[in-house]
Image (cartoon, rainbow, N blue to C red):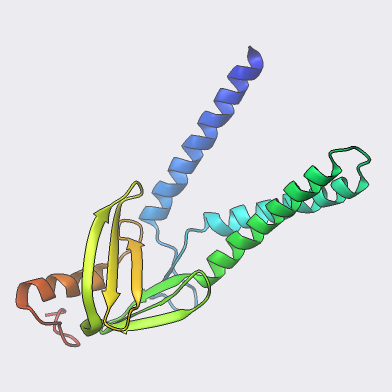
Amino acid sequence: MLAVVVHIAVAAIAGWLAVEAAHYARKHPNRDRRDPRRLRLMKILPIGGWTLLLLSIPMILLSDASHDDDRTAMSIASFAILGGGILFLVMYRNWYVAFGDEEVTFRTLAGVTRSFRYSDITDYSVRRSDQGPMLTVRTARGVRLSLNIRMYDASPLLAQLQFHQATGRWAIRGELRR
């Protein structure tokens, strides 16, 4: 009975910490140090990535030293955890979005850098999801950007979209600042 209570308490604390981390990330966007215009993924990703990476190394060593029949399963699990940690670190390193006066530049999780001018936008939509409103923008060249507008400050892009809806044309440099 005590073990069940402890498990429930640990799960409740972990859930509370996850909610607090998400709330903090929304209030304090993660900006790149070298270019403050760039918004990056939450800092919890590299923390989780390094944690998984550091946990997997002793697991790999222990699975190699094991003489049990579960040696293969432990090796597979430890390499899967290692791969998850590396994946989180690569995702954090690669992805960013930067909103300028005339264009949006972003890098995908795969590390491909793309940019488009606001005037190239042909279609945009906002849809509801579990994490918040998701803005999807498509351009004439086929570039597609989808991001959570509650988590990332996309106010320059949203201002351009509102201007386009009101006037039927895209704002030129400095026109939205007036």
